Structure formats: structure tokens, C-alpha cells
Length: 144
Image (cartoon, rainbow, N blue to C red; front, side):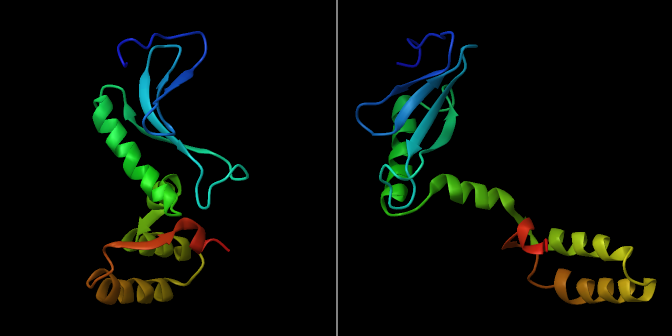
């Protein structure tokens, strides 16, 4: 299937008959990638489709890509949103990065002694302890 798919003037998708939403996308320049198309949440025609790229045509065999698509399909069938989870994970920043951004932000807005106090507190309590892993926060939490 992968080798037989030839480039055309416009991008197209060859959908699989075994797994709904799973297919091979072929671009005009000949690039091929495995995709999975689904409707998140409760699904239905009123929900916009989302498309998840699983990898290039050479990254997986058709069976491996199909198995991955089946896993994402089961997430979608149980109310999950695989693409939404992927986006949230990408936007999540580490707590130490958030603290460093905070220090840079207040450097111009606070006096040197206040900045030094904040930095000391963060170094002694924040960086030294448990706050070096992913926080579950994203950049939008800090913008007001």
C-alpha cells in the first residue's frame, strides 16, 4: 500500500478499511505519513474532526501504524481527545522554567533587594526541593 501510493497534483489520503479514520496521507512532493482522523469527546457529526499525524510512512510498517491508530481510537471512543492531550503536553512547562521566567519578569518591576529576596526564596525552597518536574501548568496560567 505504501509503495503503491504515487504523488498527485493535490494531497490525498488513502483510508484503511479495517480501522475507521486511519489512513496514509500522500503529498504532491511524494512525502507519505500515517494519520488518524477522529471526532473528540462524544463525537457525532456536530463535532469537528481532528487529524493526528502518527509518523512518516517509513517510521512504521502498516501494521504498526494501524495498531497505534487503534489505541488512539479507543481513547477517542472513551471520551478522550488524543490531539488535545498532545497539545496540552507540548504547552506544559517545567516549574523551574516558570520560576526563571518569573524572576526575569519582575527584575525590572521590583527593587534589587526584593528581586534578591524572591531569588533567594526560590533557590532555597523551590529549586532545591520537588519543583523540578512537569507542573501541569501552561503559559496561559501566568498571563492576566
